Image 1: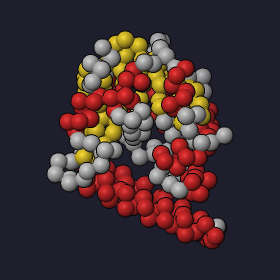
Image 2: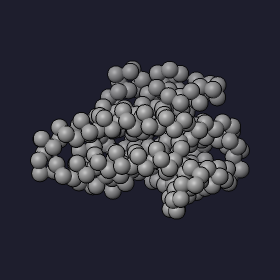
Image 3: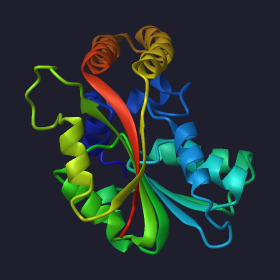
Image 4: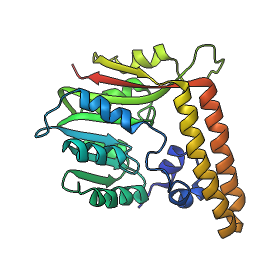
Length: 254
């Protein structure tokens, strides 16, 4: 059964909107991240196909795991709290003929990671400080990664002189200090051009607004709360575009 609060928090939606998220986001396979870049980063590590195991935390609809399994034959396990997205990922893995290389499981990352170990790579994309800080988050994730293995983190950081003071939003220097606090080495850092985020948000919001308009007609009694969600997505994107930059770090566990 879905944990509605976890899903609502992850997608910045009211709990009443969660049931409509699969419809609103049906046109998006990648949910606000850069899976193609993650694939290229993993490719650059030259990992052996036979022994590589990858853990995708907050896998969404499974695009990363399916891409890695299809292109390189890696074994990938994806965990996400939203059962609808996990079912979508399972169907896609069949469509791409990689079911024997992928496993998609519905559950709370914070609970399920306790039973995970022995991974070559663990990926956390746009999930945030789910263990309270990036220091604690990386510390927890590295427990399931083999010595010499890798953690790939995709997150945003506050631009300089943003004027924003919020403990959930941190600077570049702070995030780098936190993710290396356990002594791991940053072997690759990519800071994405601001234009990428603007273009991505523009495309995603176009689809979301179109699907929201369809739901207004289908569920007039829910139209207002759906409309609020759709409008909030635009406002949130504008806020992020103005005040944040997206980045990806590849950490090697020491």
